[in-house]
Image (cartoon, helix red, strand yellow):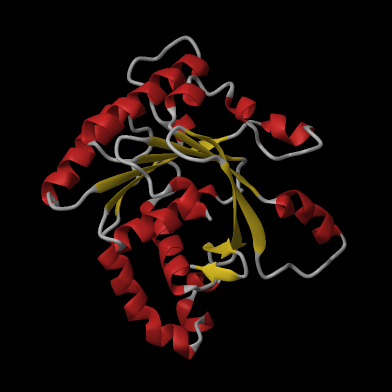
Length: 267
């Protein structure tokens, strides 16, 4: 399963989770952040794209297993059971102690300053850093092109993971090259234009949903939407562990991810 492949994110390691837009990267990040927080770690999320409110709403939907559409008007759409459990869900989110910094255009050194601040406040907890997402991290000294900028940033992330002795999980957007191939599962060369990520990252995971590409056809044919979609975690590089594929069920309406373990399931 997924947990085995990654055996928890390790201290001082950089994990890249890459996929096409709307593949489920932010939901996967939230899932990991929530698990980490509820297991006593200190999750710090740098959400460079989505604001804090939206991210919190997603975390609440995930934890409470509530459709995100219903979250727009809880009074109108929530069932009595969901209303009754609302306070418990919020208290669980509070327990997870997830810190969200949603300033746009942050540089790695601004992130460092923020991490230091949060660590000072919770000296007894081990931090785990999440960044959404790589290509929009600002570069302190601008270089001639995006390739060099990202190469610089990816080496900075590696140094930051080592300095703070904590795992860094950074999301990355894949380019369109994937779309033009018959087999749309991402491969390492899809990261080519992203600086030295291939070398710098300790773990590289690609997210892939077959249904992402089939959706359009089923919408054209007016077929009912399935309750969940199959999400593949393709571990393409793992410096200190196995590579391979882990499978999960992805419930797009709530953002919930359930690992498939043989016939059993682990949430």
